[in-house]
Amino acid sequence: MHIVYVVVKDKHKNILYNGAKIATGPLVITKKSAILKLAEYKSAVMVGSAATGKGNSKVNKNGVCEGEARVRAFMRMLRVGEGTGELDKNGIKKDPQIEYSTAFGGNKINDLSTHPMKVYGWSSAAGAYQIMQYTYAWLGGSKLEWTGEYFKILNIYEVEHDYRKKYKIYDYKPESQDKLCICLMKDKKGFIEMIIEGQIEGSIRNYGSFIWASLPHTGDNSRYKNNKGELQPATPMKTCIEHYNIFLEEELRAVSNLHLKKGFLSEFGYKCCSENNLIQGEICKQCKDYHYDVAKNKNWVHQKPSECWQTSIDILTNYGLKNNSGYAENRIIMADQTGSTLIPKDTKIALDYLDKQLKLGNPVIVGLDDNLRRQLIILIKPQNIFLL
Image 1 (cartoon, helix red, strand yellow):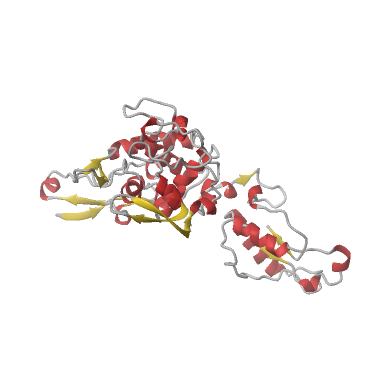
Image 2 (cartoon, rainbow, N blue to C red):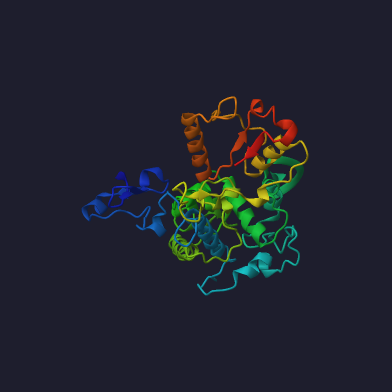
């Protein structure tokens, strides 16, 4: 027996898929299969942008971020497996919006101000992603204890997994449920990155199967066992991939039944092609380049008198920078101490740096040397800090 890895390249020899870097990538070659020039199936790869999802995510002609499209398609796929999606077990279409207000056993949720936090029969699963009451509590910072039969919610707060507070998820309405799904995925380090890269089978087996029992881990079986100690059946991998590809095609055409807004990945700290990176308008006739707009109105706050510095910190915190974690970097002096003459070389370096950061969607805090404004402060009282 020999272990080999599949490497798929395009006509320009760019690597589209590297099995050596994927947990499900090895192919096992046996004597029999070698003679017949066949390989035992372990990991199949479909060649094409929709199937491989080459890592360089971009905004397509429909204005859709390909990375975000992949994540949304994955969420729609897993919902079908959980029985809360747009297709039933026979592949017949149904209304996925009803499931946001449906709990286990078909029970209706009348109040979406929070998770129902009640058991229906023998399960507390509720909503589009079948989130259990203890999972919802954990997403709010509550510590859990396994009793041997169930997870007990303790009256102990752990800030590191208070995702609801961190991402301002204050209710259980459809958009909030979508965001809670992202929180569960984000907690598994590498999960969302793998989806963005288009490695769907690997992300299902290595990550998704931990969270949702309907997703296959080994073969077409769940990671979890039934009351007989046998592995539960899950949605066949082939079906998962088929559904994913159907939904991805729709998402790339900006057709979605989810409630996540464009740019949602950037809210969760992922540098994809979020709304921050979208090109605004045509090439500028004056500077011969595109203009970039990284402003998000909800991240900006009203400044109180004499609190320009704290206001800047608050805004950067809203953009995802941990409070007081920053430091001065790339301090470039663009003008002489009179404030009347620019230094050409350093000015170009500074502007190139600003352009690069803005194209990445990063806000930049800029300071003004107090020595340049001593004669003007009484007249115009300029602030010495501002944001780009």
